[in-house]
Each structure stands twice: as C-alpha cells, then as structure tokens.
Image (cartoon, rainbow, N blue to C red; front, side, top):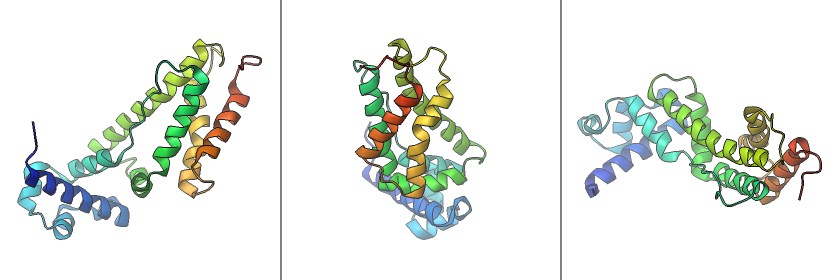
Length: 193
C-alpha cells in the first residue's frame, strides 16, 4: 500500500519539527502548538495522524533509532563479535542518532509509549548482543556461566562512553580495541584461534 505523497510530506514535516524541538529544548519543548508553529501543519491535521504528543515522540524516536541486527549466523564467534562492535560504532557515530540520543536519555523515565519504545529498542539490541555472546559460549570461547547482561555492558559501555564524551573517535580502531579488551577479560584461557 503506497502512502499519498502529501501525507508523507506532512509526516516528515511534523517529525522533523518535533525532532528539532526535542533536541533543542528537551521533552517539555515538544508540544503540539510548538510543532504547528514550526512545521506549518495544522493542529487538526496533526491530530488526524497522532492521538497525542507522546505518540509523536514515539514516532520521532522510532524514526531516528538505530536497528542493531545480529551478525550473519554463518560467522564464528570472534568475527561476529568484531562485526557487532563495528556496527555499534557506526550506529553510535551516525550524526542523526548523535543528535537525538541525549534527548532519548531524558525520556528514559517518561510514561506511556516512549518508555515502552525504549524497552523495545533495548530488547532488540540485547537480542543481537546476547546472540553473539551465546555463539562464544557454544564454541567454548566464553565461559558457560557468563553473565550475558554484565558481559554486554562491558562490551557496549566503552562505545557509549565514547559517543557521549566525543572521545575517542568511534572508529574501527576503537572497535578493535574494545573487542580485544573484551576477549582478554572474558575468553576461556587457551580457547583463542
């Protein structure tokens, strides 16, 4: 089913305006009146497509959120881990995500759909990370009793820190460094190839 070009333009204008307002002033700056003023889209049109401001915020975050997929199932653990870390670096370095990420953090404790969306995004990311870590366990590269939540935090934490502080650069060198450090800390001794 194709979306009418006018409807698509309206959606894009509302989401762009809401995103800009969110980034500039935080969640409290995103009101339907402010979106109307910035986008030029009539309030009645906005309410035809969204029931509330929270619904617009959910769509803003959904439209900007990265999608982390588990690496190809044919890859062994270490190449999959390196692929995952490189993809995380790419996602976290994306300018649009970098612009919206701090605002998402402020919405963390927000009620309704925004909090639900954040939980869905986290679950999607955890699925990809846990899947790769489970490969390591299955191959005997990681201990069978590995705490997946803690190990995932150790892997992703340095990349998030780099994204939040703008240093070091989110690049292949950092990705390699983080994976090498992760393997030194967690790999079963003598299991390396």
